[in-house]
Every structure is written in structure tokens, then in C-alpha cells.
Image (cartoon, rainbow, N blue to C red):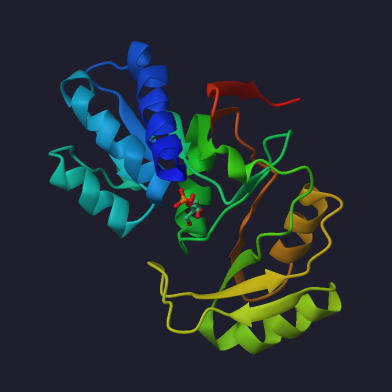
Length: 224
Ligand code: 5RP
């Protein structure tokens, strides 16, 4: 199977995973990226079974609306049973690096509200140690150079993702060569830098379950 076929398989598996829990008033948290898009397309087949969705990006909101799925503002929603999203890297503890699609801040916010985070990923995303994928950090534009200098002090090599403005009007620094022995400690450290909006480590709130697309089928993995 190609990587795209694995993504489609996990998107469909995620729609099946949540289907038994869908009720007339259910609102689903939906992530961003090519794997999340596969989930949106699969979810659309069940749109008569639930009320609507909250999206972690304008792009996902548009895709949901194109399928005729109502999209709610998170401020009008107090409970989300599920948040389904992809990852750039995920480890056995279901800690992740996210933000390759620059949607990390809204992704972290919607994930914070959800009771269960279901990560959907093809097998190339599962890693023993995180940090090969450059860690995205969203910053207030005027703080970009200051934050970059602070990240250099932590041992990383930040590169400005020029031309990218996030849905929150932020800039993105992609941090290469960062040693991440503890994802929780690094997430907390980066959060402390003034001017950082969000960093792409999802360790304080990891996924609850991983649906991993492999050549032998979709594996369901719970945090170890
Ligand atoms: C977007 C994300 C995505 O979940 C991550 O980049 C994975 O994307 P894809 O499913 O396209 O490989 O964090 O900000």
C-alpha cells in the first residue's frame, strides 16, 4: 500500500472507531492535514448520525462545510467526546510532534477540550525518539528573532518558515537538531519563552489512542 492508501485506511478506521458513540447532539473535534482530510471524507458518510464539528483550521472547516457538515465555534461548545488528528511524529507514549501544517495552536486548543484524542497516522510517523522532524513553534511576529535566539540557547537550530502566516496571524519557526530527552520537559521549557504562542510538542496532553496504518492493516495502540 502507498502512504496515501495507508492514510485513507486510518481515516476510515477512525470514522468506524467513533461511529458507535455518535448521537444526534454529538460534536466532533477535527484536525488538520492530509490524514485528517481522509478522516473528514470518511466522516461525511455518517453525517446524518451527529450534529456537527469543531475544526482546528480554516482549511478543515472549509472541507467539512463542503461535505455539508455544520462547523461550530469552539466557544459555543462545552464538550467534545473525540478529537481526531494526524501527527508528524508519535512515540510509544503517544506524545507527538505536530504543526507541519502550521495549525498547531488551534490543534492544541481543540485537543485540550476533547475527552479522547485519536491520532491517525501511517507507520512512517511512529518513532522511537522524537526530533528528526523539525519542531514547529508558533510565535508572535515581533518576537520571532528573540524567540529564535532563546531556542539556540536550548541547542536547537530555528528556521523561519518564510511566507507562512498562521490562522492566528503568527509566524512559524521550525526547530532542527533539537535534543528532546523528555518531551514534557521540552514542551514546558518552550512554553516559558516570551513571545511563543504554542510549540508543536503534544506531550502534556498526548493522544489516548493511535490508529496506525501499516502494511498488515490498521493497528490500534494505546499509550504504554
Ligand atoms: C498540521 C498537523 C498535521 O497533523 C501533521 O502535519 C500531519 O500531517 P499529514 O497528515 O498531512 O501528514 O499537525 O498542523
